[in-house]
Length: 313
Length: 293
Image (cartoon, rainbow over all chains, first blue to last red; front, side, top):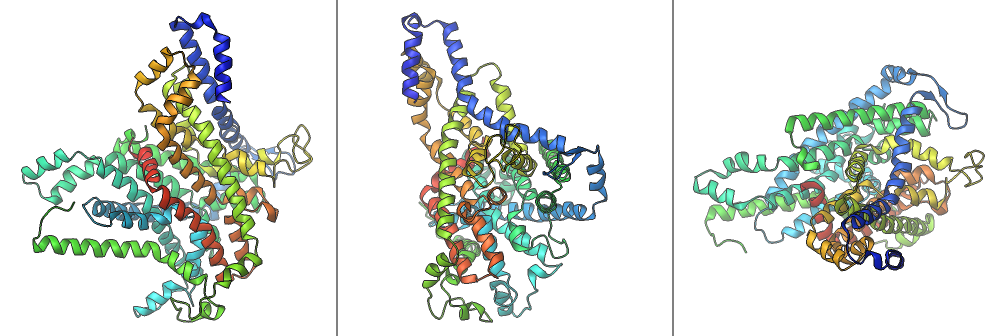
């Protein structure tokens, strides 16, 4: 297709374009540029632009899909504040994020540091640690569901081997959330480790040589050189991880269905329930905008604090 | 090669390092091992308390039985068709857009780029409800009239599974980053030779960013294969079900037959693990490019 278009274009511009004239070239470039972004822009308009506007508009309506939306002003948002399950979901999402993101970041930085040494079999370790990341959350959550089985699951077998009595994990209001968090950490480590490892490998070695000459200990080098130099990577990992954690859905769907007693329901889960189990589209849109606003706020806040916007440029 | 250093302290450090890394790797791998072993256990072994790690009897027939209990092969084929379509479409459309935004600066191009970056910020869950409605009310499809009323639109069709995921802003973003690094001289030489802009993109610049194509292709395929919520929402019939949805439905409808479920789960995870093992370098490069630049 490309080659045909080339030929047509060559024929159309003909000999008059032979002496390359700046203005004509610029116009050709602009035309080509617009032509080439057009499909992607059109797609984004339909599947991102319109949905965003629609979500905002629908959040002011009561809408069950079958009958036309009815404008109800701010009622959805007022309802949100008195909705104790949604408040619980906001709390759960925050707890989940607060525990998975920093813990997984810490562990993955440690692993990256360990792997950033001259080590035989490094690729094998890296591969093993990354594999949970490329496998579907639905599939691995099913495996964890089986691991958490109180009677014949692996988790309690390991605990009883250590002489401990395991809980009923996913049907316990105390242990369901920690169980979901463990899966989140387990699956999230790979990607963070990889980004940290790539960042570590791009650090200038001269600085470390100079620091060694100056007698700085490894410990000192880590805190005074490595950590500050990793700031863009840390910013990137943090922002993407928070965005990811706030949108966790699949593992909850499989592991707990939000239960027991809403102890593991997340904002995404409430959006899904409002929209597709209760058919309250307007209300679900309002919930989704709260999620969006929270994410935006967290990203901007983090950018303020770390000043690390270089990473997302 | 390891530096020649033989002090006892160094050697102890090495041993600790290896032990720690081995332990971590094991923790990461154990669920998969458990999955594989469970998939070939007999019902008796599965119910055993305390659980046995290895089956007393290797029931390889579980796989054939699982395929009879649910059309996992059809589900896997559907997932493959969708993932492959998303990959081809993303690579084509996003590479053109990424190229134009990186190399053909035109009026409004930086604004368009900013819009794509902004689009990355919008959570899936904000877009997904209106996207569902767009699919549901797609005019002139599935019995809908021109205003989108009367039928079911794209619901339960390949359109719904393929079109909304045809381009992701992330692919556009990644391609732009890769095209940015190419030298201007190449482009200008080609222009002097009278090559059209599309020709420069297709014949001169694109062959130089092959790794970018492989990276975007692998990431797209993986994301599409692993996607769950969207196919769950827009499909109903068994013949259009993707593997992740098939697994979740099988679990709720069959009172959790673990051996079959783990066989299906193996089918859902192993292709991605293999793909990752083959294209590891490109996965790493993709994530690193997205993260560091």
